[in-house]
Amino acid sequence: MRLDHITIVAGDCSFLRQFFVEVAALTEGPRPPFGSTGHWLYLGQQPVLHLIERSTPPARHGISNGPPATRIDHLALRIDSHPEWQALLQRLHAHRLRYRIETIDALQERQLFVAPVSGVKVEFVIAERHLAAT
Figure 1 (cartoon, rainbow, N blue to C red):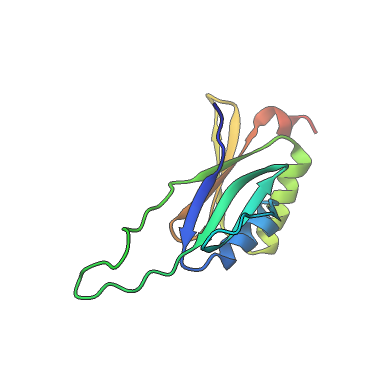
Figure 2: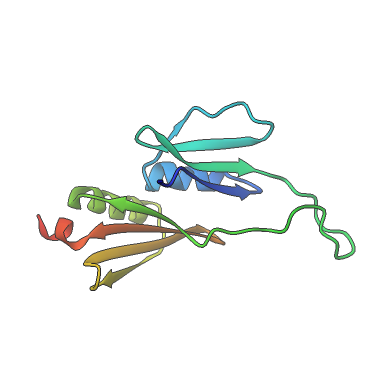
């Protein structure tokens, strides 16, 4: 068993698409002709992130007209080289995105957390050995 994909549903996916393509360096690829608007973003040959645009009419009289909002706590992407890590940092700075880095000594990993939009957190993780290799 392995992770196939993560789906994020949002009212407007344009900023999420821009973040994942320009900052996370995923590529947009083919998407089947579903009845909704969206994007499939690929990591290599695998479509790992599905973005779906959904417009839900506003609630009337306190009663929701659609399914309750759901959120994914975070999506984690692993980085396997120091140059790739440095390139990520440069893209984050170029887009003026705030992030936080934590070191997990027990796992010998470094984690970088960024929230491109409210309710969506992305983690980039790299083994310390990749950072020490340069």
